[in-house]
Image (cartoon, rainbow, N blue to C red; front, side):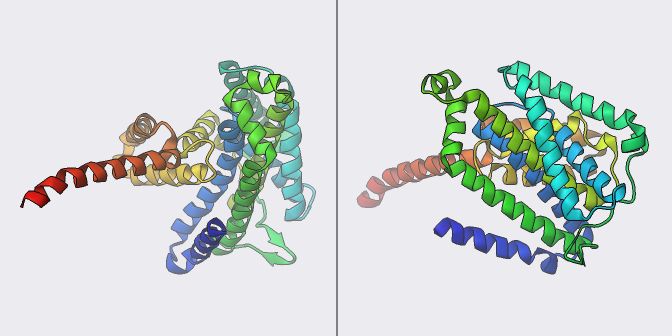
Length: 326
Protein backbone atom coordinates (compact mmCIF):
# COMPACT_ATOMS: atom_id res chain seq x y z
CA UNK A 1 0.00 0.00 0.00
CA UNK A 2 2.83 2.41 0.91
CA UNK A 3 4.58 1.59 -2.35
CA UNK A 4 1.40 2.26 -4.32
CA UNK A 5 0.89 5.59 -2.55
CA UNK A 6 4.48 6.60 -3.32
CA UNK A 7 4.03 5.62 -6.97
CA UNK A 8 0.79 7.63 -7.19
CA UNK A 9 2.49 10.65 -5.59
CA UNK A 10 5.46 10.37 -7.98
CA UNK A 11 3.08 10.06 -10.95
CA UNK A 12 1.21 13.16 -9.76
CA UNK A 13 4.47 15.12 -9.60
CA UNK A 14 5.34 13.97 -13.13
CA UNK A 15 1.98 15.30 -14.34
CA UNK A 16 3.07 18.76 -13.16
CA UNK A 17 6.35 18.69 -15.12
CA UNK A 18 5.06 20.52 -18.27
CA UNK A 19 3.42 23.11 -16.01
CA UNK A 20 6.63 23.87 -14.10
CA UNK A 21 9.11 23.44 -16.97
CA UNK A 22 7.53 25.02 -20.02
CA UNK A 23 10.66 24.67 -22.15
CA UNK A 24 9.60 22.55 -25.15
CA UNK A 25 13.14 21.20 -25.60
CA UNK A 26 13.14 19.77 -22.06
CA UNK A 27 9.68 18.28 -22.61
CA UNK A 28 10.87 16.66 -25.86
CA UNK A 29 13.89 15.19 -24.04
CA UNK A 30 11.65 13.75 -21.32
CA UNK A 31 9.34 12.30 -23.99
CA UNK A 32 12.36 10.64 -25.62
CA UNK A 33 13.58 9.40 -22.22
CA UNK A 34 10.20 7.80 -21.42
CA UNK A 35 10.10 6.01 -24.79
CA UNK A 36 13.63 4.72 -24.15
CA UNK A 37 12.49 3.60 -20.68
CA UNK A 38 9.86 1.37 -22.28
CA UNK A 39 12.53 -0.39 -24.38
CA UNK A 40 14.83 -0.61 -21.35
CA UNK A 41 12.06 -2.07 -19.15
CA UNK A 42 11.46 -4.74 -21.79
CA UNK A 43 15.18 -5.52 -21.96
CA UNK A 44 15.25 -5.70 -18.15
CA UNK A 45 12.63 -8.47 -18.26
CA UNK A 46 14.96 -10.46 -20.55
CA UNK A 47 18.35 -9.54 -19.07
CA UNK A 48 17.58 -8.56 -15.49
CA UNK A 49 14.96 -11.16 -14.61
CA UNK A 50 15.73 -14.04 -16.99
CA UNK A 51 19.50 -13.56 -17.38
CA UNK A 52 19.64 -13.62 -21.21
CA UNK A 53 21.85 -11.02 -22.91
CA UNK A 54 20.60 -9.29 -26.07
CA UNK A 55 22.66 -6.64 -27.90
CA UNK A 56 20.29 -6.15 -30.81
CA UNK A 57 17.16 -4.79 -29.19
CA UNK A 58 17.17 -1.56 -31.20
CA UNK A 59 16.21 -3.73 -34.18
CA UNK A 60 12.85 -4.59 -32.59
CA UNK A 61 12.36 -0.94 -31.68
CA UNK A 62 12.87 -0.15 -35.40
CA UNK A 63 10.45 -2.86 -36.55
CA UNK A 64 7.78 -1.49 -34.19
CA UNK A 65 8.32 2.05 -35.45
CA UNK A 66 8.15 1.09 -39.14
CA UNK A 67 5.12 -1.19 -38.58
CA UNK A 68 3.14 1.65 -37.02
CA UNK A 69 4.38 4.11 -39.64
CA UNK A 70 3.33 1.80 -42.48
CA UNK A 71 -0.08 1.08 -40.97
CA UNK A 72 -0.94 4.76 -40.62
CA UNK A 73 0.70 6.27 -43.74
CA UNK A 74 0.28 3.52 -46.37
CA UNK A 75 -2.99 1.94 -45.20
CA UNK A 76 -4.59 4.93 -43.51
CA UNK A 77 -5.18 3.06 -40.24
CA UNK A 78 -5.78 4.97 -36.98
CA UNK A 79 -3.02 5.25 -34.40
CA UNK A 80 -4.41 2.54 -32.11
CA UNK A 81 -4.34 0.02 -34.98
CA UNK A 82 -0.74 1.03 -35.74
CA UNK A 83 0.16 0.52 -32.07
CA UNK A 84 -1.41 -2.94 -31.99
CA UNK A 85 0.28 -3.80 -35.30
CA UNK A 86 3.65 -2.78 -33.82
CA UNK A 87 3.16 -4.94 -30.73
CA UNK A 88 2.01 -7.99 -32.70
CA UNK A 89 4.72 -7.63 -35.36
CA UNK A 90 7.50 -7.31 -32.79
CA UNK A 91 6.15 -10.16 -30.66
CA UNK A 92 5.86 -12.41 -33.74
CA UNK A 93 9.38 -11.48 -34.89
CA UNK A 94 10.64 -12.06 -31.34
CA UNK A 95 9.09 -15.54 -31.39
CA UNK A 96 10.59 -16.39 -34.79
CA UNK A 97 14.04 -15.07 -33.85
CA UNK A 98 14.00 -16.25 -30.24
CA UNK A 99 12.99 -19.85 -30.89
CA UNK A 100 16.33 -20.89 -32.45
CA UNK A 101 18.66 -18.30 -30.85
CA UNK A 102 17.55 -18.82 -27.25
CA UNK A 103 18.83 -22.40 -27.43
CA UNK A 104 22.26 -20.78 -27.39
CA UNK A 105 23.90 -19.82 -24.10
CA UNK A 106 26.37 -17.24 -22.87
CA UNK A 107 28.22 -15.11 -25.40
CA UNK A 108 26.75 -17.00 -28.37
CA UNK A 109 23.28 -15.60 -27.72
CA UNK A 110 24.68 -12.06 -27.50
CA UNK A 111 26.53 -12.56 -30.82
CA UNK A 112 23.38 -13.91 -32.47
CA UNK A 113 21.41 -10.86 -31.27
CA UNK A 114 24.01 -8.58 -32.92
CA UNK A 115 23.44 -10.45 -36.18
CA UNK A 116 19.67 -9.93 -35.92
CA UNK A 117 20.21 -6.21 -35.43
CA UNK A 118 22.43 -5.98 -38.51
CA UNK A 119 19.98 -7.97 -40.66
CA UNK A 120 17.06 -5.72 -39.70
CA UNK A 121 19.05 -2.59 -40.50
CA UNK A 122 20.06 -3.98 -43.91
CA UNK A 123 16.41 -4.79 -44.66
CA UNK A 124 15.37 -1.26 -43.71
CA UNK A 125 18.05 0.18 -46.01
CA UNK A 126 17.40 -2.05 -49.02
CA UNK A 127 13.63 -2.74 -48.99
CA UNK A 128 13.09 0.69 -50.54
CA UNK A 129 9.46 0.33 -51.80
CA UNK A 130 8.29 -0.40 -48.24
CA UNK A 131 10.71 1.38 -45.89
CA UNK A 132 11.92 4.23 -48.11
CA UNK A 133 15.51 2.98 -47.87
CA UNK A 134 18.15 5.47 -46.78
CA UNK A 135 15.68 8.36 -47.22
CA UNK A 136 13.50 6.91 -44.49
CA UNK A 137 9.77 7.22 -43.92
CA UNK A 138 8.15 10.66 -43.81
CA UNK A 139 4.83 12.33 -42.93
CA UNK A 140 3.89 9.99 -40.09
CA UNK A 141 0.88 11.65 -38.40
CA UNK A 142 0.58 12.59 -34.75
CA UNK A 143 -1.27 10.01 -32.64
CA UNK A 144 -4.96 10.53 -32.01
CA UNK A 145 -7.42 8.71 -29.78
CA UNK A 146 -11.21 9.07 -29.92
CA UNK A 147 -10.88 12.20 -32.06
CA UNK A 148 -8.37 13.88 -29.73
CA UNK A 149 -5.08 14.61 -31.48
CA UNK A 150 -1.80 14.64 -29.54
CA UNK A 151 -0.28 17.25 -31.84
CA UNK A 152 2.10 19.05 -29.47
CA UNK A 153 5.00 18.09 -27.20
CA UNK A 154 2.90 18.71 -24.08
CA UNK A 155 -0.01 16.56 -25.29
CA UNK A 156 2.42 13.85 -26.36
CA UNK A 157 4.01 14.05 -22.90
CA UNK A 158 0.79 13.00 -21.16
CA UNK A 159 0.13 10.20 -23.67
CA UNK A 160 3.65 8.79 -23.35
CA UNK A 161 3.58 9.22 -19.56
CA UNK A 162 0.33 7.21 -19.33
CA UNK A 163 1.74 4.41 -21.50
CA UNK A 164 5.06 4.36 -19.59
CA UNK A 165 3.25 4.21 -16.24
CA UNK A 166 1.11 1.35 -17.56
CA UNK A 167 4.19 -0.57 -18.77
CA UNK A 168 5.88 0.06 -15.39
CA UNK A 169 2.85 -1.37 -13.56
CA UNK A 170 2.72 -4.42 -15.86
CA UNK A 171 6.43 -5.05 -15.28
CA UNK A 172 5.87 -4.89 -11.52
CA UNK A 173 3.06 -7.44 -11.78
CA UNK A 174 5.27 -9.75 -13.85
CA UNK A 175 8.18 -9.42 -11.38
CA UNK A 176 6.04 -10.28 -8.34
CA UNK A 177 4.13 -13.13 -10.03
CA UNK A 178 5.09 -16.83 -10.19
CA UNK A 179 6.25 -16.13 -13.75
CA UNK A 180 8.74 -13.54 -12.46
CA UNK A 181 10.04 -15.99 -9.84
CA UNK A 182 10.45 -18.63 -12.55
CA UNK A 183 12.42 -16.10 -14.64
CA UNK A 184 14.74 -15.50 -11.66
CA UNK A 185 15.20 -19.24 -11.19
CA UNK A 186 16.39 -19.51 -14.80
CA UNK A 187 18.74 -16.59 -14.25
CA UNK A 188 20.21 -17.98 -11.02
CA UNK A 189 20.88 -21.52 -12.27
CA UNK A 190 19.38 -22.75 -15.52
CA UNK A 191 20.48 -26.36 -15.01
CA UNK A 192 19.05 -26.50 -11.48
CA UNK A 193 15.79 -24.99 -12.74
CA UNK A 194 15.55 -27.68 -15.43
CA UNK A 195 16.17 -30.39 -12.83
CA UNK A 196 13.30 -28.94 -10.76
CA UNK A 197 11.00 -29.35 -13.77
CA UNK A 198 11.02 -25.77 -15.07
CA UNK A 199 10.66 -25.52 -18.85
CA UNK A 200 13.58 -23.11 -19.27
CA UNK A 201 13.41 -22.95 -23.08
CA UNK A 202 9.74 -21.90 -22.93
CA UNK A 203 10.42 -19.31 -20.22
CA UNK A 204 13.36 -17.75 -22.06
CA UNK A 205 11.29 -17.53 -25.24
CA UNK A 206 8.40 -15.96 -23.31
CA UNK A 207 10.72 -13.36 -21.74
CA UNK A 208 12.12 -12.56 -25.18
CA UNK A 209 8.64 -12.14 -26.71
CA UNK A 210 7.54 -9.87 -23.83
CA UNK A 211 10.65 -7.71 -24.20
CA UNK A 212 10.16 -7.40 -27.98
CA UNK A 213 6.48 -6.48 -27.48
CA UNK A 214 7.65 -3.64 -25.20
CA UNK A 215 9.97 -2.50 -28.00
CA UNK A 216 6.96 -2.48 -30.33
CA UNK A 217 5.09 -0.10 -28.01
CA UNK A 218 8.12 2.19 -27.83
CA UNK A 219 8.59 2.05 -31.61
CA UNK A 220 5.01 3.10 -32.32
CA UNK A 221 5.20 6.06 -29.92
CA UNK A 222 8.58 7.08 -31.33
CA UNK A 223 7.36 7.00 -34.94
CA UNK A 224 4.34 9.21 -34.24
CA UNK A 225 6.26 11.60 -32.02
CA UNK A 226 9.09 12.15 -34.53
CA UNK A 227 6.98 12.02 -37.69
CA UNK A 228 10.02 10.69 -39.55
CA UNK A 229 12.00 7.44 -39.42
CA UNK A 230 15.57 6.81 -40.53
CA UNK A 231 17.19 3.35 -40.57
CA UNK A 232 20.37 4.91 -39.15
CA UNK A 233 18.61 5.68 -35.83
CA UNK A 234 18.38 2.02 -34.77
CA UNK A 235 21.92 0.69 -35.08
CA UNK A 236 24.33 -1.29 -32.90
CA UNK A 237 25.24 1.84 -30.93
CA UNK A 238 21.61 2.33 -29.79
CA UNK A 239 21.35 -1.34 -28.77
CA UNK A 240 24.50 -1.12 -26.65
CA UNK A 241 23.35 2.18 -25.16
CA UNK A 242 20.04 0.68 -23.99
CA UNK A 243 21.84 -2.33 -22.49
CA UNK A 244 24.24 0.03 -20.66
CA UNK A 245 21.26 1.95 -19.25
CA UNK A 246 19.83 -1.27 -17.81
CA UNK A 247 23.24 -2.25 -16.37
CA UNK A 248 23.89 1.19 -14.88
CA UNK A 249 20.42 1.51 -13.37
CA UNK A 250 20.36 -1.97 -11.88
CA UNK A 251 19.44 -5.22 -13.62
CA UNK A 252 16.53 -7.11 -12.13
CA UNK A 253 15.15 -4.09 -10.27
CA UNK A 254 11.88 -2.57 -11.44
CA UNK A 255 13.15 1.01 -11.11
CA UNK A 256 16.60 0.16 -12.52
CA UNK A 257 15.88 0.99 -16.20
CA UNK A 258 14.16 4.25 -15.17
CA UNK A 259 17.20 5.42 -13.21
CA UNK A 260 19.64 4.16 -15.84
CA UNK A 261 17.91 5.99 -18.69
CA UNK A 262 17.66 9.25 -16.73
CA UNK A 263 21.30 9.03 -15.58
CA UNK A 264 22.88 8.30 -18.95
CA UNK A 265 20.62 10.58 -21.01
CA UNK A 266 21.29 13.43 -18.58
CA UNK A 267 25.03 12.70 -18.80
CA UNK A 268 24.88 12.71 -22.60
CA UNK A 269 23.30 16.18 -22.58
CA UNK A 270 25.50 17.54 -19.78
CA UNK A 271 28.70 16.48 -21.58
CA UNK A 272 27.82 18.20 -24.86
CA UNK A 273 30.23 21.12 -24.06
CA UNK A 274 33.12 18.61 -24.27
CA UNK A 275 32.34 18.28 -28.03
CA UNK A 276 34.84 15.75 -29.47
CA UNK A 277 35.56 14.31 -26.03
CA UNK A 278 31.87 13.88 -25.17
CA UNK A 279 31.85 10.12 -25.80
CA UNK A 280 35.14 9.70 -23.86
CA UNK A 281 33.73 11.43 -20.77
CA UNK A 282 30.44 9.57 -21.19
CA UNK A 283 32.31 6.25 -21.39
CA UNK A 284 34.39 7.05 -18.29
CA UNK A 285 31.23 7.81 -16.33
CA UNK A 286 29.71 4.53 -17.44
CA UNK A 287 32.84 2.57 -16.51
CA UNK A 288 32.88 4.32 -13.11
CA UNK A 289 29.28 3.34 -12.41
CA UNK A 290 29.86 -0.30 -13.42
CA UNK A 291 33.16 -0.58 -11.44
CA UNK A 292 32.02 1.11 -8.23
CA UNK A 293 28.37 0.01 -8.43
CA UNK A 294 28.41 -3.44 -10.06
CA UNK A 295 24.78 -3.97 -9.05
CA UNK A 296 23.75 -0.70 -10.68
CA UNK A 297 22.57 2.46 -8.93
CA UNK A 298 19.29 1.01 -7.60
CA UNK A 299 20.89 -2.34 -6.66
CA UNK A 300 23.68 -0.57 -4.73
CA UNK A 301 21.37 1.57 -2.56
CA UNK A 302 21.02 -1.08 0.22
CA UNK A 303 24.83 -1.53 0.32
CA UNK A 304 25.40 2.25 0.52
CA UNK A 305 22.82 2.58 3.31
CA UNK A 306 24.44 -0.30 5.19
CA UNK A 307 27.94 1.28 4.86
CA UNK A 308 26.64 4.64 6.10
CA UNK A 309 24.96 3.01 9.10
CA UNK A 310 28.14 1.09 10.02
CA UNK A 311 30.21 4.28 9.63
CA UNK A 312 27.82 6.23 11.85
CA UNK A 313 27.88 3.39 14.40
CA UNK A 314 31.70 3.34 14.53
CA UNK A 315 31.75 7.13 14.85
CA UNK A 316 29.31 7.07 17.75
CA UNK A 317 31.26 4.29 19.49
CA UNK A 318 34.53 6.28 19.19
CA UNK A 319 32.88 9.48 20.40
CA UNK A 320 31.22 7.71 23.35
CA UNK A 321 34.27 7.21 25.73
CA UNK A 322 35.64 10.69 24.97
CA UNK A 323 32.33 12.28 25.75
CA UNK A 324 32.13 10.34 29.06
CA UNK A 325 35.71 11.34 30.14
CA UNK A 326 35.10 15.01 29.34
